[in-house]
Image (cartoon, rainbow over the protein chains, first blue to last red):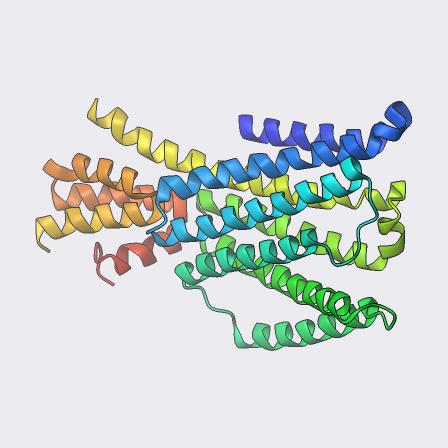
Length: 262
Length: 67
């Protein structure tokens, strides 16, 4: 219960900060929102790191959570760099920047973590879903690359843009893996946790697509476009809640043995 | 099934899903329990956390029940 209250309150406070503080704090708005943006990511990172420790890296689930932890560490690194660029140095960042490479790396680690977890579960995709997924992937990559390709940009910039398109395909597949993980635990306490991982993955995907659609406005930091960040905050809050739930399940199971033997 | 196998299999199943520390706690707990008690206990635990279908699948995989 406390986890629901904690994460719900965290999201509401951060969302309210994004939506209502600009008129109150003026020029400090971007720095303030950049800083509070890191909080749910840090919380999720600590929680999943704790899970990795509880399972141990040598165990299959431990490896999954270890890779997810690494993905969030790298994501935090990217966000930290972005705060330095945008709020501390206040420089116009040339695309692609080191932060972009860290973002891309984080997606890869997260994808590997979700893939390993799906592999452990042993659930299979029906063949029709494989075909639909291939078609969706091809359409996604075509549309995304068409949208981001810039004739006037450098080859490196276009390659990174293509890499972001591929990364979003990985996010889509990760979301599907998370949903299949949830389904295999139907009727059990782990179902809810993995469903929240699915919600978090979908939020990232939607956020990435919206940035693509409103790239100019987002790049200029326009107020409404900046609210897209709330979707990634949904991701961090959902992940944090999911991994906290799994932590609580483990503690609960462990405490029953102590109760029985005492 | 060998009693030692059941205890070990049960502990392995718990370690796989809840981590090695919890697995060790349960290995200690199951030390003086008979097969039926162990299987009944772990079955309830797995059903609660993994759901009935996944629990059955895992119990089969770890040779705690037969199909």
